[in-house]
Length: 307
Ligand code: ADP
Image (cartoon, rainbow, N blue to C red; front, side, top):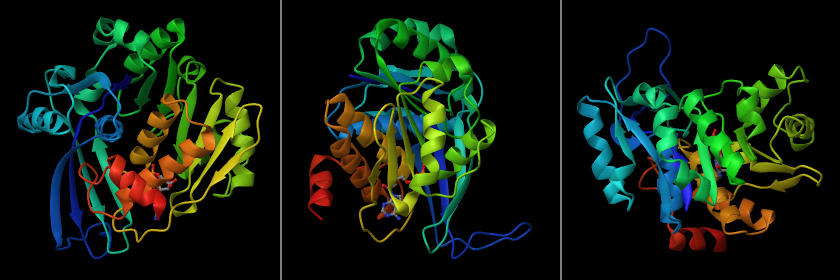
């Protein structure tokens, strides 16, 4: 099984002709509220590809928390993974323009109140997982605890440090696979005192190699329509072009990519094949509005890979 450490976010998004400016009110063409959050997207994405999923998802005690259980059930995930904590549920608000460009802000809410105690209760599932996935809508204490348990058990881990903050050294040390987008790679470069790269494979490699020295043995940088670069420790960088699709809404592309990568690597597929699967999952999500329903199953993935 893959163990997914949160998060759950009620994701609201408005479709607009162009992104609003400061002080401006725009009429939206469409409005969508869907169950989301990076953790849920990873879990649903991996489940649709056939993986068995275990995990922990924190929700609050407000009206938005009611979105979670039906969403998990609809995706074939067990609601026993939900933990109800006092206070607000994680919530996000985003805009997508006519070109598919987006901006968003997420309030993590209950996701940051998930603590080491709840994680410890799931220690056996974490230790027995094929891969443990975490992202940064979940708080540091929970991620550190989960990755510590995984490391002690020899379980592989994957971290997507988004929204970006510099990972605590102990979290980075226990991260086996690190998946970042171009903005996060630049944030790492700045935090490590390296030249901030343009989104080009050759310039990203030194950043990835500097990260290897701090823990991860595989660093993958996603570059939107520019594809992705994977840098394994002690091996040459691999470049994966994006699959050619008309982008409607790029929201969730990174989560879909990461879910595909996680499932493929947990199935012990070779890295080049895992990257192609990941890129196809990303492409499936960008050609449709929304994320939850756009995450591909095996049939949609196969059709995308055939072109
Ligand atoms: P994030 O959503 O985290 O910012 P990216 O935008 O880098 O992540 O996208 C993740 C992956 O999704 C890319 O590496 C690529 O494979 C795929 N992808 C993103 N945008 C497009 C696009 N316009 N066309 C095709 N594939 C895309």
